[in-house]
Length: 233
Image (cartoon, rainbow, N blue to C red; front, side):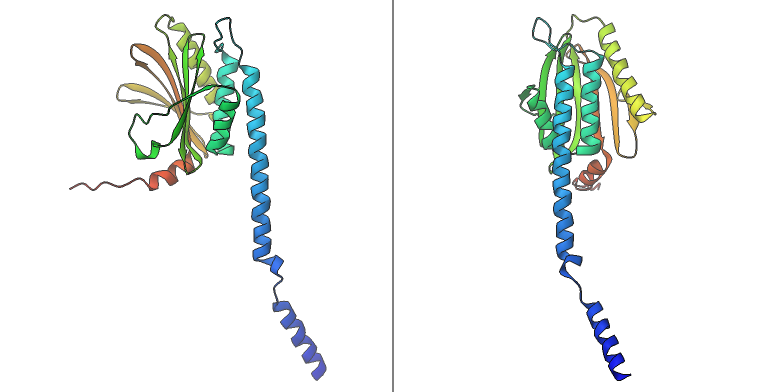
């Protein structure tokens, strides 16, 4: 009887021993696996979307990109997937570098500390110039989007047509929209549980502009919490 108690006691003591693989080593193995999986996922994202953009970009005799439904849809798809899935600034920068868009100096026109680090790519299209902006927050995409700036020679039907393409694409992705008027500018907002975006139309230096911006809700919320608070006296 006594030997049975000793045996049970030894089994209990043995059961209390924790295999290192059940704690820190296991957790580190899982972290390593997830990092590798993330790198593979991001690599596929870069490769697939680089190919997608290259296939959608066709140039005319003036070496300008023909901006059409296929091109606009491709750019929006890349930006949405970057914000909702990859989320890494580096991934998006690599894609636009790979398709050989011109990179110019990023300017923080708003003077907002949250917008202090960014990247700007540009290309000429058949009706004007496109500027693609990526704003970084600790390696993650805080906000991205594009401006289509049309030359004065372009009739209004071209910007209107392109705006319809943008809105139709977003409506299919988000299934909802909300229109606001802010400082005289009409904003069409779209959102789901991961991202939110808006489209606007305005004039800049007498030129018509179609504007699109998108952000990840969690990234934006985390960054906004670090924004310096002002005290009203």
